[in-house]
Amino acid sequence: MQTLSKPDESRLWADIEALSAITLPDRPWTRRPFTPLYAQGRAWLKREMKSLGLEVSQDAASNLIGRLPGANPSLPPLMIGSHTDTVTGGGRFDGIAGVIVGLEIVRMISESGIVLDHPLEIVDFTAEEPTDFGVSTVGSRGMVGNLSDTMLGSKDPEGRILSECIAGAGGSPERINDSSRRSGSVAVYLELHIEQGPVLIQAGLPLAVVTGIVGIGRYQITVTGQPDHAGTTPMTMRRDALTAAGELFVKLESICRESYSAPVVGTVGVVNVSPNAANVVPGEVTFRLEVRSVDPALIDTVCERYLSEARRMIESRGLAIRIEELTRSEPVNVSDLILDTLQSNCERTVGKGTEVPRIPSGAGHDGNQLSRIAPIGMIFVPSLGGRSHCPEEWTDIGPIALGAEALARALLELDKKL
Ligand code: HGY
Ligand code: MN
Ligand code: MN
Image 1 (cartoon, rainbow, N blue to C red):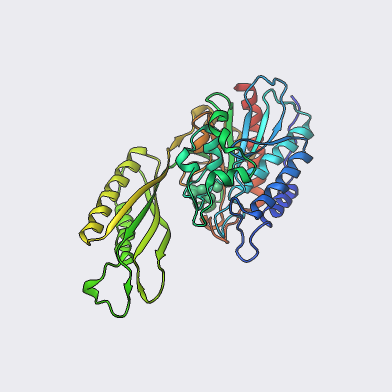
Image 2: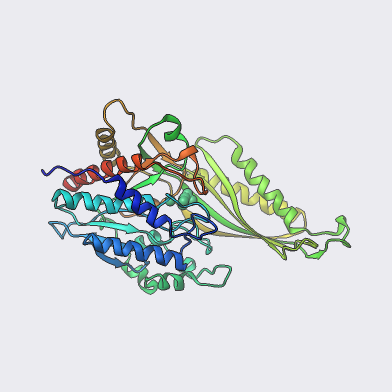
């Protein structure tokens, strides 16, 4: 079998820099989905894919796909992917490292003269991060048939409709359900991603194998009180929606701080106050919360308990509450075959004496959705300070190159095994 060529660190770095430089200039690194910047980033990626000889297309959910034909076209594709959209102010490596590594693996395979049996698809999944529509992993949901009509019809604060944005990004939302991929139509989905946590950086290790990915329950809650003059309304006569919602923020934190059979985290990350004026008692507050765990039953238990307590607290104040479930993604466990294949190829790449730990992902990924139709696997590379989703997000190019080599080796092995 031909020898696999090594990844080229300077090429990898140049790609990461080129793509991450496409950002809001005053808010690095930001490339929100369904924006001109996002389209600019994808145009760059399309050019790169074409320059590598990949067949470039977009599916009904607008996922951007570069395909390398295999020796046996009847086999389902091997898939490597991630995302090029970012949260606001925090996406220098989150997602793009995985897509860029996919491009580099195509180069490594071509330079080595290797022809895979399976086709290989490199995918930039649309809108992996939570969108202003309240839906995350939009493209991968669409690819596996898990993007509901409700989600497609959801509106953002500007009144845009998600299905129209998908169409504007190159998809065909009316075909999403008919063209979704079925179980077995993808041989395996692999992703390299930054860890976004402290394990690797604290241990001084370059690679980890991901054992599983948390599930996430996301809700939107609207608390309705009554707007009043902030100066003339006595404290005893107020129906202040913000102080009431504030109690709910602290309640989520205290419930999630209790100890459970598996880790649980809860966050309120989006809050909108109306009318949001210094001299008006807030009449209405809408906020979005999420609860995460590797144990789906725990997500259910914690969410049910929190939502019933929230309802009781708001009604005891004489205010109104409306609770809407936004999305639910299920936790995923990686199969032993994929774990062992990634483990052995990571160890072979980093060399004897360097440990390759196995850790769960507290972050959600497109793998949550792809696991509905295919076996998945992930490799982590270190995050400086364990931080992510912030301008300080940083990963050295060395571990990214090692991850590219390990993932490429695992891919070649799975090409023969699957
Ligand atoms: O939110 C997450 O866990 C991921 O960064 N999208
Ligand atoms: Mn992210
Ligand atoms: Mn990500």
